[in-house]
Structures are given as C-alpha cells and as structure tokens.
Length: 375
Image 1 (spheres, one colour):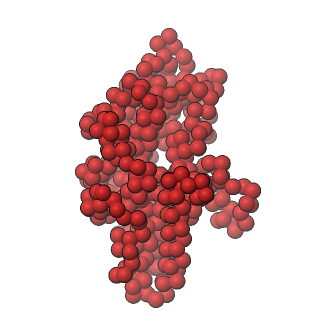
Image 2 (spheres, one colour):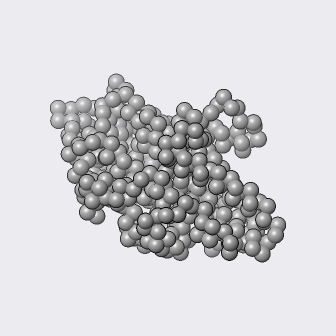
Image 3 (cartoon, one colour):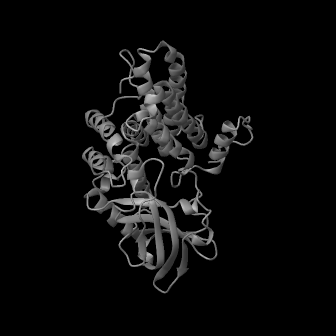
C-alpha cells in the first residue's frame, strides 16, 4: 500500500505470504465498488479470499490449517479490509465461528466441521449477538427447552452474516434457568428458516440477515459449549469489542487515508489534516499489535475499539470532504467508505464503546471513570 512516493508501508511487513496477500488486496479494491452494494453474494470477492488461502488462516494445523499467529492474522485482516470491507467482514464472521469450534476442544462435532472447512467443503458463520450486544429481542431471542435427546430451539438469531451461503451457524440459546448453550447448527435442518438479506446502508452483499428457528430439535452432539451461565461473558469470547473488529475498522480507515494521501500530493491544504489522521492511525495500530502480543500496558480492547471506530469515521469523512461533490457520487469510493464506516458504530458495539461515541458526537467530555477497560 502506497501512501505517497516516499512513504513506507504502515504495516510491520515480513509477512511470509506477502505477495499473495498484496495481490488479494489489490483485487479486492477493484471488486468492492462493483459488488459491495449488490443484493447478491459477492462471488468474485469471496473467490479472492479463498484463492489467497484466507479461509485456512484461523484453522489449526492439525486439520490442515495455517494457524496464523494472532498479530499476523490482525495485520492480514486490516490489509484485506483496506481493499474490500465486505469480503473481509464475511471472513471475520467465518473465522469467529472457527474460533468457537476450536474452543470446544476435541468435541467430535466441532472437529468434523473444522475438517470440512479445511477441505473446502463447508462455509460456516456465527450468530450470537442475541447473547451479547443485541439483547433487545426479548421473547424472540433463541430459547432452548431440554428434551430426552437434547434440546428444542425456538426464536430468532438476529444478525447472521453470510447466512444464505452458510452450511452451518454457530449460535446460542438460553434455557429457562438462565444458562446458555452454544450449538453448531446446520442451516438445512427442519425448522431452520434463513430469511432474505436485510437491506443495509452498506455491505449489502454480505448476506446479513435473520435466521428463524421453529421447534428445531438438536441432539447433545450439536452442543459445543454449555450449558453454563453467561457462557460468552469472558472478554473477547466472541469478538465483542475484539481486536479482530478493531483491525478491520483500521483497515477501512487505511483505505480512506491512502486515498486522502494521493489527493494531498496536489493539495497542500490537505497535508496537515492528513498528517494528524496518519499519526493517530499509527498510534492505534501500534497499540493493537501490542495488545495482540499480550502487552498488558497496551490500551484495552474496548479503548482500541473506540479509537478504531473514531478513525474509520474521521478518515472516511475527511476524504469525502476533500473530494467535495465528486465524492458524493455513487461511482466514487469516498461515499462508500463513509457509509461503510458507519457499520462500526452498530456492529458488535458494546454499550461502553457506544456511550463513548455518543458523548463525543454530542460534544460531552468523556468521563475517565466510564472506561471501556472492562471489555
């Protein structure tokens, strides 16, 4: 990625698969403007993801995966997102499901799915927001009733990305006593209805929608975790305010900053804003990598998510402003970046992070005591 004639790459470098990742980023950048807002699965963009080997980055070596170290995986997420946010977002949800399967240990069902994913025979995704950040569905949230063979599931999984493509969704349900279970649920089972994709402000091609469950009977073999109280309450358990989402937000900001840098070559008035945004981006990126390396002195995941959200918004709106009326045309990437940046305000955005954003938008000073450090 070139910021200008004399600027070095903003990333650390040293990726053992540098050439393939760079080619994928370049091709995604060509395709995102063509596919991101279509009401159809992004076949070409997802093909780029698969050809780059990205669907195997999170898989364990025991099933033929590449088992990337976390800091390398975060860098690759950010780089891919700078090329095309839609396909990278789909990948992040695919990988979140993989992480939950891995966390179940040597569970036979989880191992079977991991092997199918590694062989290219299955696409999986995750839908657990009703257990974490989207608790407003009340009676419609997924409920589990114990049966002789296992459980019966009823309710709605509210936000599932890639749902129309997925062979399986890792999801959760709550028992009457408040305990929760996580299940590996095939999408073609009786009683599972995948709705048509939602009409979104951006990332339409991500096929994000609701899955409705009507008396879906599962055996205990499909339960990969639980029953247990607050199954997903551990920090970073499913990516809420997680480093992965922050990396993708910084990748989206990177795309806008690179475009702004190209404009700044002929626009001296853009130099100062670009330099400030660039310095803020680099600081956040360094903090993200330090946190991924388990540096306890690094910013918390919640603080990093708030900063990454802020940078995605500021960078994309700066670019749109610099592009003037031309940037508001549907043919211009600036308007797409600005719309896509809004995504981070609402997707897996925990209440403390959202409150920081609301106070900043209202011009209210942030209370140091109301930290995001608990996330």
